[in-house]
Image (cartoon, rainbow, N blue to C red; front, top):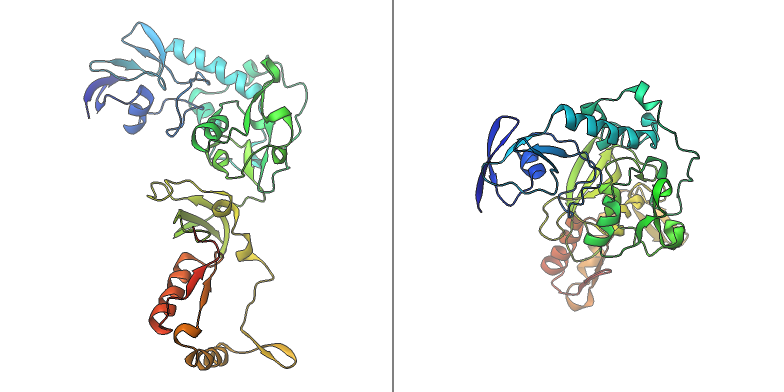
Length: 345
């Protein structure tokens, strides 16, 4: 790693010379307004908000300019702030401002940018508002797309291209009519979208939102059990119920990414149809019994079935930890290797 010494707003920093100005500043806790940047994607400089002054005589985009030894950077000048204010006003004038009804409220990158730059309502009043409200695409069974909240940062488009390699969405139309859409501007469900939700988790505003979203109170770390990949899961919990799921950052198996099953396939946990007590089949049908009676009954039956006469099938709808216990029980207690999983790879 090559080291460079740069100065940002008079503060001397020692950083990796492979970093951009924006990355180096963020690592040191210096905020530069931005909307279209994401560390996992190639920088495009679309939002123009990360403009900075370098060496006192030229302006550049912090997300696309690498640092070099001796660089002098100013992130705030009168000229830069004036340029940023115009760019921000153009975004807000075309943006749904009902923040209280948005799932990203208080966690929105546009809110943070607006708070940093400042919003002048008198100046905003001069802007031409959107002529019509665009319809919300609710066709996908897992998430909705509201183009009225989209800031055209392109993060979802680049995610689908660079990370998922599906290219289900792109920019459609031109000028004031530009929007993110699938092929032929058809509903998302009719595109080749695989519903992985990678675009959803990277959206900096509330344009992409999970259906029936509830903000979790805490997260529980576990491993997805739908297949043998071993993707890391962070399950969002609220009122003793799983309400959302996200990938575990830095997980060696999945690097924080998930497929549609891992991200959205947890609703069965909260299903009212789940069994709440053991059932034993009698002549009259299934009868509810106590746990002690059920366990005694199962132990009695299993005691006569050790060895090759026994086999177990693990379930993708059990936790990874429960499946581990089942295979351990099968091998150590039932003394057989006859165990399989419904979704093994």
